Amino acid sequence: MKHPANWNKSDLHQHLQHAVDLELWTIPLYLTSLYSIRDLTKLKHVEFPEAAKLIFSVVIQEMLHVELVCNVCHALGYNPKFKFPSYDVTKGIPFIHPPAHAIPDEVKGYEVRIQELNKESLKLFCAIELPHPKKEIIWEKESRYNSIAELYEAIKVGIKALWDSNYVGDEKNTRQKNNFSEYNNQHGKKHGFSVVINSLESALKAIEAIIEQGEGADSRHVPSDFQPHAVQEGQEFDSAWYKGNLSHYQKFRILLHSHHKLPHVYNEMLTENAASVNQKLSQLFHYFWQLMEENFHQESDDMPEPFWNAMFALGPSIAEVWQNGMVPDFAAIHTTVSNS
Image (cartoon, rainbow, N blue to C red; front, side, top):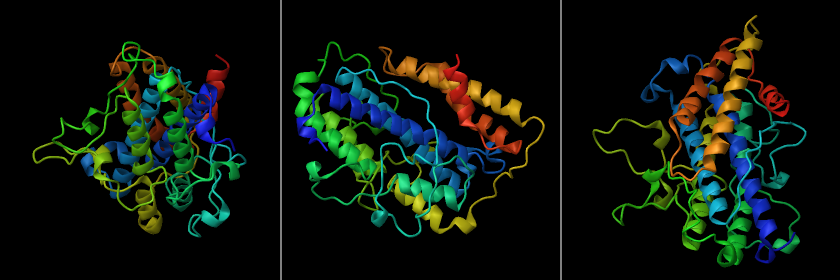
């Protein structure tokens, strides 16, 4: 493997695109299992069962990670593409190939496929977020990335080497999004990090936040700088911040260990409306994906109302497909887009 310190601009852009693809790939996967929980859409977030709160909090942080990587891309003059995810058991996790010896026994046998919340889906989630021990990586001796953390460690080295020659400059760095400003350091009064990327330091800290929050953190607890701020007394409960001290891996591992206590999910028993309901989900997801790509490339620090409306409509739409006894078919979404 080429040492990332020797990357050229094309190498860095390619790896940043891999990171965008990977972060986007996790979101439908996690959402689909989340909304397989029976009657979840009837509950307020504060009323969600423990499993739903944990998974929802991970989904929201995955959206944060998409924003962070896209901000890094734009700061370095690259416009990321938003490729539709595919879930193929024969291809495994995109760009990541965990070695057999590193996979815990409880996680072995995982398969990459869309499914309800159960022991098997949690094995996959743990494999995706598998921790990577902190150690020196001899890049020339590696032939692949064993974990998400390794991919991001390579990206950090590449950014260090190429930042000065590739940063677009403050005047042209106008596509930075700041939808997760609650993570910002409040003028030194609270822990945090900058979501907006306008320096080498902010770029490296953003990548470190992604690693520590879940993609291969080598600890049980997320460092305080990368945790959402604690909800203050009187503030409305926000499940997006739920147990922010735990990494994604730890959250999924907790659920895997207690899989026999998971909430009830919908049964796979097709109704006559299943196909049409899934087609509605396909159209909504296509629209959401299009809005996401368009607006991440706009010169604005936030996303417009139609984007948020589409995003928050996804959960109920996924749940409706499950209610009709069908596993949401994201391949159909891909086909719809490809033929458009």
